[in-house]
Amino acid sequence: MAERPLAGRPADAGAASAAAAAAAAALDCRVAERDVELSLTVPAGRRVAIVGPNGAGKSTALALLAGHLRPDSGEVHLHGRPVSSPGLHVPAHRRRVVSLEQRPGLFPHLSALDNVAYGPRARGVRRRPALDRARAELEAVGCADLADRRPHELSGGQAQRVALARALAVDPELVLLDEPLAALDVEIAPGIRRLLADRLTGRTVVMVTHDPLDLWAMADDVVVISRGRAVQSGTVEGVLSRPGSDFAARLAGVSLLEGTVVDDDELRTPGGDAVTGYRPDAETAEVSGWVTGARAIATVDPRAVAVHAAQGPAQQAGDAAGSAPNAGSAANGVAPRSLSSARNAWPARVVGLAPAGALTRVTTELRDGQRVDAEVTSRSAAQLALAPGVDVTLVVKAAQVALYPRA
Ligand SMILES: Nc1ncnc2c1ncn2[C@@H]1O[C@H](COP(=O)(O)OP(=O)(O)OP(=O)(O)O)[C@@H](O)[C@H]1O
Image (cartoon, rainbow, N blue to C red; front, side, top):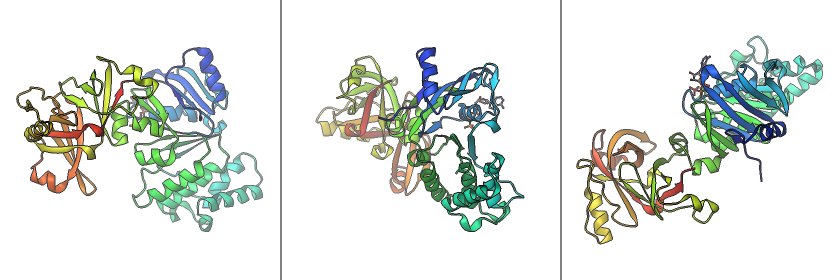
């Protein structure tokens, strides 16, 4: 089994330094001015994405690894060697760390070939082998025919390819990516993403991104940070299939509801809505976390959510279950029961609409303010006259609501 990135505080200092010594990159430090206190371990050959809301501390983590920022306390290790610790700071240019950012940052007065050869030359490689290496790296990113061009003669995508060649020409121990696709046109980005995925496989990479496509295409593991602290980590699939925060849920494209366990297959939200679903973890050891009164989360795929005019479907759900409907509404503040074991019916209010390809994404709020997105055809959105402020009932099959104990 692959080693996992380790986020959060290690149990003791001995374990922490052992993990740091074994890792390709590790930081366990604090930057007081930014209220950032991060612990992160990146195993060799893994590509770890750091995600989180604006201001969470993602760039700070990259700056600590690159050597652009000194921690107030704690340590940064690269390949088992401390590079920042009390009384020690190895400067950026003496770390074998390269960064790819939104701007390629090529030297404007040098050709593409000389830009790529610059790194090996600066590390003492003789001119001819440095140029040979640069040609091979340009070839590998599909830019062999652009070797003689200056940066201003390259398109944005070509410049980013040359920047990748330049980064890899120095055999870095660690590659940092800070949203390298963010400034590219949507037609260009997919090709560069594939190239990065291909060229960075097997290398040790820490990337910052806001795009879930990047996670699936380029990352092995993901660390979610919030307010300067790591709050969840694991494989991309593990984190996105079981998001522990609203932020991770949005990345995964699902809505997240929190509540407390009331039954084997049901949680209740703070607003009193019953959320009936299925438990993917039920057969595993984590079953122990599912006890009445414990905190729990539900994830809901927006495409599984049907939007109905307020109250109507609750009535229908009750009819379908053959029971007397007792649905309340957002207006009267009475919690409607989930009227059938097969269905959920939640009163909600529309708070936003946005195009989502051929569909319309409807963002709604339950009575306790928790958000649930639904994707409906634009025709349905028009027929229901959906607009911010409109009360609706959301209907979701239990089979499409995944329930988990809260970690
Ligand atoms: N140069 C700085 N001096 C002081 N505080 C800073 C500085 N740069 C960032 N901060 C603060 O440190 C915290 C973490 O910022 P950081 O830039 O690392 O977040 P981020 O997750 O990269 O955000 P974004 O997604 O907006 O780029 C924030 O509170 C921010 O305001």
